[in-house]
Amino acid sequence: MTFFKICALIICYFVSRAAFSANCETYTGFSQKEKVCWENSIKGWISKSCLKKECKASLFFKKPQARPKLPVNSGGKNPDAMICHQLKLPVVILKDSKNYEQSFCIFDDKSVVSSDAIGRHVK
Amino acid sequence: MLLKFSFVLLFSFSSAWATNCAPKNFITEPNSPFQKIPVYDQDGIGICYAYAASQLVDYHLIKNGAQSRTVHPVWAALSYAKELEKKNQSQTQNLTSGNTKETIDALVKSNCSYDIVNRSLGIWAKKANVTDAELVYFLETYIGKYHELYKERTSKSGGPITERDIITLFNKTRVEAIQKCSWFATWEQLLPMLKSLSILTAPDMIAGLLAPECTPTVAPLNLPKIQSKYLSSNENKILGQISSQMDKLNAPVSISYCSKFLSEPEHVGIAKRSIFKQPVLTQECEPHESVIAGKKTTVNGCSLLIRNSWGSAFSDWTKNKKCLCRNKQTGAFVDDCSISTHNNGRFSVEGCWVEEEQIKKNAYVMTSIGN
Image 1: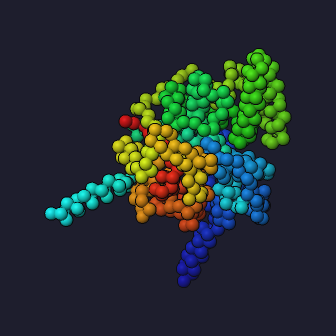
Image 2: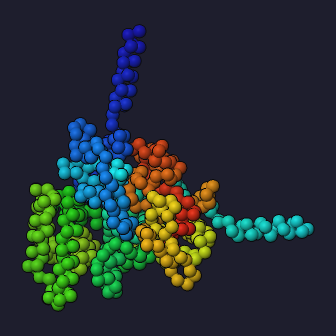
Image 3: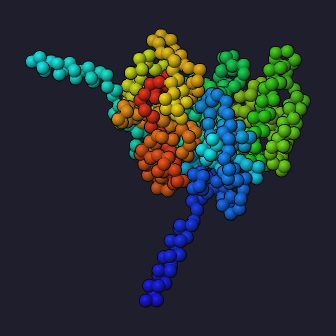
């Protein structure tokens, strides 16, 4: 009986860990590495450090933001990245483990968030 | 007998109008070259034509034995700009908006490997002790200032740009960068390189800065004929034209189109098509170029799989579309995935399906590699 109890406890431990473990990845640029995690509330990738304590990137999503007026898009620029540029947020292209690229917007405190999440949030 | 004749007549007419849209997916097919060509994100740089060109070239090379991708899209854009300058067609050195066929032609003359370009960027970022974004910001600012001075000197015959000018420009850029970038940046590490470049134009400067290793050794690419043509003036033939070219080459093609329809499905970008002239675009048209990596028949006709260069996430353009996703863990493909069901961090967007009517109203040029 005790054996079964221990087994149940071990299973519970791993199940709870799996439930709370974040989906995190290391994205790389040509010189930098950035640990980002999937944040379901914004449906996008955000700096891992923002999960532990509040950062400028997470604060951005705390209140509604006005959509900046975009210039005419010539040459097929990424509209989400253009929003970041209009908001005066620098943009960096980072790659996942398969080298797939994604533009990230950088905040003053160096926290980053994927541009698609920014694009969806501004209205 | 009359009935039989009518049936045959009816059948031949209906097959003449129907688009041949036999399903094809160049991303999911076994050993697809696309497995070695990532989905790109072109950020706020308007060089979509270079992203399309690099993917078409890489697809062809990998299909014919290359082990990895070869072409860096930024290098493709620079090669194109340099060729334009040689022909004296471009006084502005503005990389935004270009021609996919001419970009591939330029690459044939002066390619530089993807790894060298990427490594060079990394070396410069490390030398200057800055992040990728800071380096790009610095270079954009510097090159912008350089270009203004170049225009001023050539228009007023003010003499050549001297080393002293370069130092002045460099210092002005550094002052601006201090407000935006890291305090620990060592921009002066870039100065010797900027001074040593025998430069006249911005594309030459970036090319020299990014990849000096490529300048002396030009590795020509071996490619078959590049084809580029305006799509049919009869919009009912456009899908058939694209579809049959993909079948004939057994390879993806790229199309030029007005991109607004990606977020506004009813958008019409082509004002008028005519047989002998190029199509007239509406004022609202925002020209873009993407690779078409597949086709299939749906209830709405022939749908094309657009492999865009706007990143691998579910962004605004993927809204209300069926897409092709890849499971990041297993690599398995999921067709007809959507933002409402698969935007959970576990999938990358490979491309999205766009409908026949939208292509008819917005696409105008097709480019492909091969006879």
